[in-house]
Image (cartoon, rainbow, N blue to C red; front, side):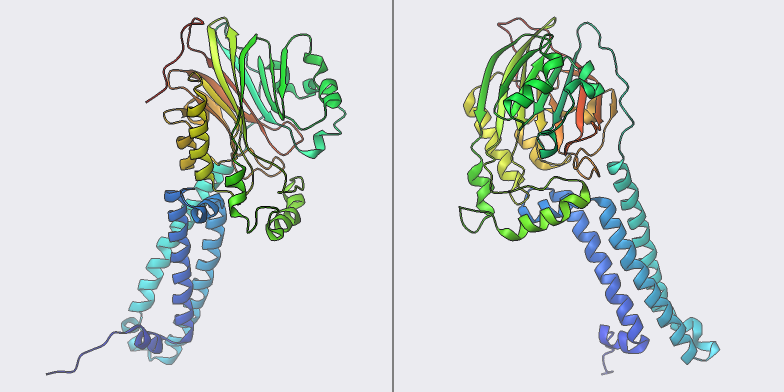
Length: 403
């Protein structure tokens, strides 16, 4: 019986040398990066680990993959040249099979890297400046902007200094300024708008506001679940966040502050009839499970027995394409994807946008003509502006929940 020929990895490495082994290791790391990226895009935030992996921008995966592939290519070239230097000329072709296979794999992974880079660039693209769009008689123009960062507490301007705020019929604002500052900032709209402020959320509307209800989502238990004790956040992630916050143009923050999540549900009386809206603000702690927050939020909304909203809008603190968004409002659609005229991009952090975490979810019966995200010039968030046609209804009628 002839002896068995063992084509082991060890024999292959011994045959082709140390630099080939390093090139093969780098190639393995590149494959691992691809698998990690694919897993993050498929699983999104279904688990806490994949949530963090999903938050890494695709362009970052592409850059890391490209660096590893270039390292592997350099090591492969060195290995190839050293091997050819040791062999006579007539044996060159017979010895290059392993190198050719590695080059083929490298080429395929390079294409993947450039593909990830292209998709990542499209996701990170910031929209052009907003050109004010006039609304038809039946349309409603709604603006949402979270301006609750510390730099707004001493803002010397007024709300109409932001051009987009002058053209909206309804402004939904996240605010943490004191009452005196809020009154001064909103003064230009005090005569023309109905104003309701509850906690950190404010509604300013040209249309009458009725049926106002607040929902304390009581999500503190989920936000605190990632802490080792229930009294204070771990110092390491607060320090890590604040050390890098200023580099990204983000305000420093303290994670120990209460952040239970809130919803203001209200009804607008428009020329088209009654328009139920939910204005939402979800917790922002980086270590809280977005999937758990979404499921708990959906349960709180069901328990509140509210009329089916035509629009759910606000700071979700959940990136676009996350599975959690669909869990909050099954059947509703992202205005950024379904508007006839959409131009949007990441909304946080404002100075260097990385993630789109501010959203507008519309009922499938609603026609959204325009959706934009815009840079207001300060605060931590970009704003969002949409023009939609509500479903015509009387006070006794309401839209049917989708699904």
